[in-house]
Amino acid sequence: MFEKVATAPPDAIFGLNDLMARDRREGKINLGAGVYKDEQGKTPVMQVVQEAESRLLEKQASKSYLPIEGLASYDRLVAELILGTQHSRWQRGEGVVVQTPGGTGALRVAADLVAGHAEPRSKVWISTPTWPNHPKVFASAGLEIRNYRYFDAARNGLGFDAMMEDLEQGSAGDLVVLHGCCHNPTGVDLSAEQQVVMVDFLAQRRLVPMVDFAYQGFAFGVEEDAAWLRLMTERLPEVLVASSSSKNFGLYNERVGALTVLAESPKASAAVLSQIKQVVRANYSNPPNHGAAVVAMVLSDSDLRQRWLAELAQMRQRIQDMRRRLTAGLDARGVRLHADGNGFINQQNGMFSYSGLTRSQVHALRQRFAVYAMDSGRINVAGITSSNVEPLCDAVAAVVQD
Image (cartoon, rainbow, N blue to C red):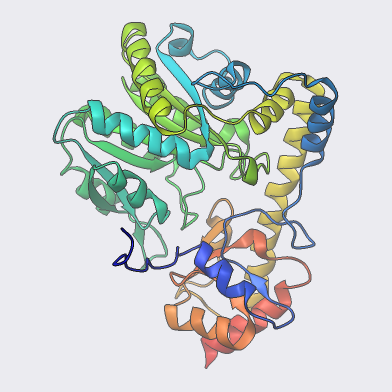
């Protein structure tokens, strides 16, 4: 069966981690993998998560299966977190939530749902660039992929006009993958005004948004980051949302996510849920409990919730501080990553920055200084710390000024 199987290329992100693991040099800097790191360069367990896990351990009485749709309290609380507690359509029964194995699992369940029940010619529109796994997930479900321009390298920012021009080629019923905030990999988001224009455009063209909402709380705050998503769910008849607890709860290896779907009526919503359950049952049957139980405990306890928001704010502020220090360090060395300077780094949101580094410069950083970043020039700003920011700036200056 496997005699003639060809070797697959390594994953762009995890392959970089493997390459770095084989590097024996001291002082390696990992700016590749999209995980949060603290000042010690570690991906920590949040204190509030540790407290919730301790409480769960004391009272846990069973390891029985969850239902196909997952932990009911988690599903409800996730809906409230992303949609708000007073969302009119949710209260009318027009929305459903299913717990999934991470945000990636939510995307795949959504892809299978669309592939099985959307218009036969429905296409999936994905930004250029995007998270490398997006096209793989949707293509694996048998969906046709189209791309829309997003990042304008000339201005090192959003190419909104080009984005809209490409999406005008979409047909009613097509799925448009949008990053809810903290666009991965660029860190460049739509302005509030552009978000309103986009929602109106989607409504007029009858395009359906598939919102990847993996970084809620990492741009401006939990409520602020949800504003665009809530606008979409109030104005558009159908919206799909893949959310994740990996980043804002630090639950990377617990694989906790959710697929939320808003439909035009309670009847349509119930039908969608029934079909999602068919997809899940044929795939992984039901999701794991532990991570979802942790999130549910934190969100349902007022003290734990406030402590979680405070910890998340500290994480967000640390990333913003590293952006400022990186910008200042490059400026001090006379390095300009863009013709207009380095200020764009501070204007981007979340963990990632499209740095403007070229592929050859990225390879030089890797070979000469053990600094690991994506070939595209995307860096994970959370991988920068007080102890490595100056060596990083030295390294960047060396490869840029050569």
